[in-house]
Image 1 (spheres, rainbow, N blue to C red):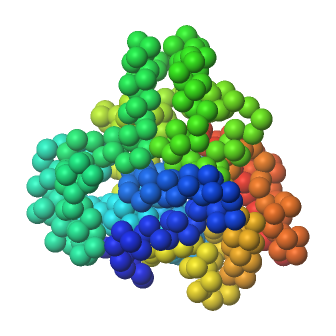
Image 2 (image 1 turned 30 degrees about the vertical axis):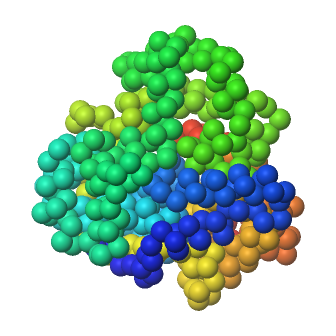
Length: 414
């Protein structure tokens, strides 16, 4: 099992970490209440699968054998996928107790389910009744106490959490539930979202989107629902990020454009994000697309390199603050900066700059298209970094998840 430098200490600690990162204490009371509501929603499992494309990441990051990576864990898929690039080590950090438990379970499954069919059934398909016995007999004995307590504990409706792996783990969690509601809404308008997965060409995908999906965003109910920040909590979008995502547009129009990219810009037979969005899970066939770490050809390398992962339940900035100068050279921030105040951004980038090795690269995503750093992080810090617009644009275009407005790359100056 991957090393755990900081043990989870229960839901109370997780909630405090999340509230400390999300709640804007200087904001009006109404904004603080929304932030606290999001923090409460974010306390449980949010992402069973991470929604940033690791293939686009690895292209932009240029990971090599000497690379020392620090990344936010989320669903754990990308940290595992980065192992295929053969880095020296990856520090994997998350505020969320559920995400830490999920990462630990995935690591343990990869280590101990050495038959590919067993591993695929447990993690990729994640909907078989026999997965419960697999957990009890082959995985639970290798898990730490905190992880076992989480998976053997009960959710809000009294079900043991591990049973989600018998009914489709990717249908669970905040995002999984949000996608489920979106599917119900689509069926209300007599649309089957899975229809697009049967399209044979990009032209067919475009036709299905234009004829079936695009009109939904003109419906009054959809426009009304998406006009409220709380409606997008299920996408993991906090109130602070909602305004940045919307910009000067109606949120329904923004979401339509993002869904159009997902549906029309990449072949569905090579985009597992499309399968998650439109099919609520990975495809069952041997040809169905999967994240790099779950592909049979990559598993021997991933399994061999598991000990290079260092999983921590902590605040990303605090991990950097406790690290020596020159510790890391690859930083992946996901979209966490969209949540941050100017003071938090400045503290984060001060620690990134202090801990960065020569040639360091920082990759992050934003809800809106432009980088959010200029004007918010002092020039004295940003002057150490070179923004790469061409590589950032290429990474944005290549990101098959299609959720974000921009993918941004900064490189430490010589």
